[in-house]
Length: 205
Image: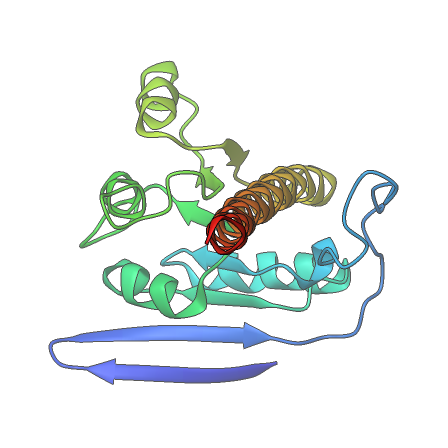
């Protein structure tokens, strides 16, 4: 585990990246309906935002032991947007109750005008109050993880969210490829029409 600290006045941000060998890989999806070069789930990026270093360490250990090789953590929620823009995560595990900037504010920022509206966000909370859950869902979160964490539940919810993220990315890639092919076809059609018009003019002359 390699740990780096980013210090800036008047705040201090702690970020941690982990890189550990795979131990228990998540079950892969059948690849017959997806691009063969699609990223494995274990290579997708996971950002953990929690002010409690113990929770961060536990989640990193669970993910690393399951083979996830690219995680980063933030313990000062004020740093979340800067880290997210640089890291470009595929999934955010977000604590709800934090000092300075709470989870609700972070969600609004991640979902803001310059944010990723379809980025999966799993809220970490010990508050099971129905009103809180409703408010979080209305804010646009993807799922919940209740503290204390259950290993199997963490891996199941993370894996499901990453699968949804990868499907969306593959659909977007396919859509972009179709649009590019359509634009090229229209361009070629125009060039052929101009060539045909030029040849017709030459025959008339």
